[in-house]
Image (cartoon, rainbow, N blue to C red):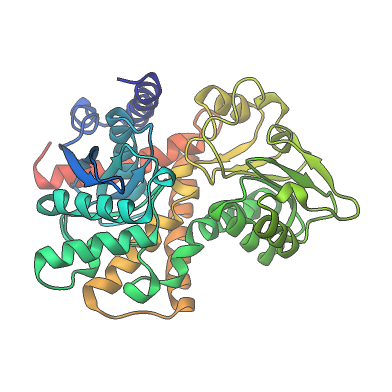
Amino acid sequence: MSLKGATFLESVLQTLKRAIELGGYPQEVYEILSRPQRIITVNIPVKMDNGKIQVFTGYRVQHNNALGPYKGGIRFHPEVTLDEDIALATVMTFKNALNGLPYGGGKGAIAVDPKKISKRELEELSRGYARALAPFIGPETDIPAPDVGTDPQIMAWMVDEYSKIAGRNVPGVFTAKPVILWGNPVREYSTGFGVAVWAREAAKKLWGGIEGKTVAVQGFGNVGYWGAYWLIKMGAKVVAVTDSKGGVYNPNGLDLTAVKAVKDKTGSVINYDAPGTRKVTNEEVLELPVDVLVPAALENVIHKGNANNIKAKLVVEGANGPTTADAEQVLHRKGIWVLPDLAANAGGVVMSYLEWVENLQWYFWDEEETRNRLERILLDTFNRVMIRWSKLGTDNVTIREAAYVEAVDRIYNAMKVRGWI
């Protein structure tokens, strides 16, 4: 058991325990939700380009299906562990429940660095994983999607492999597929859009609106870029962005299109140069004098060591787990709102749900209609979490704890009427 995985899993279970206490649910709820219903381990032989066979180990953790089919991504990363996969699957159960989706939680992983194998080897591995899991997944059983190290192309290979085994096209078994293969164009920016919607709604409660508020974004990948894009469209002013090499800050606002062009051309936003702009590190960007901070890169970047230096009034978690538990307590005492990952970055899984609905009925909405449906679900979740937070007491309970109580409540009631409890 890796220390990283064990620590993450223990942290998730501690949050679950706290939510059960706050909600007054019976101990049996913890007994059921603290362990997955099923763990599938697969070993996939792949003939490498050098002619040798290499066997890759993969997992699929199916945590809980009280609310519906298991749902969660597939991660390709050399350091994945089973404990980490269990923790991620558990979080997916709460994320799906919180957002009112008819899903339970699942997560998959293969221990591999996708950047160190050829495209042919990657395709063979992806198809092998789909074949190995075929008896355990399906549009009404378990619906995987991309995660770290995977993308729409990998989903295309997997849905094709599954469809070959089934003897018919089965689009609804994987989500976040290419648009040409039953995907939806909104999926590309859905997570960043969700971050922006949550920031906008919280800003309305804090200041009366997001217009003119300054934003710093740590992480200029898919989530960070699209979060910044939509926040600007909503009237905010993005003044700082960083990527893995560092970033830039201009208190008067950045030209996001120009920053993106520099990153695409040179590989980093740090090469953007305009009057009034200065370079910042990934540590410095967190402590800038801004209204809104969006950590959209790595986990645990806001910790006990820098929490007292955070000046933003609103922290919106675009990444998974960017704020440690200790840091969150510090921020809470300072009156800083932390919009938790299972809510603020849930636009991707909500969009996956909409894509799945389209696939099941072989009927597709246009981009605007899809985005409107996505936004309605996000707004409903925001309002429910705020009401729950208010009822639990905003002084003694964090927004994250309120979100977990809201999620556990839905799972508990589903298990109760099923007769599991």
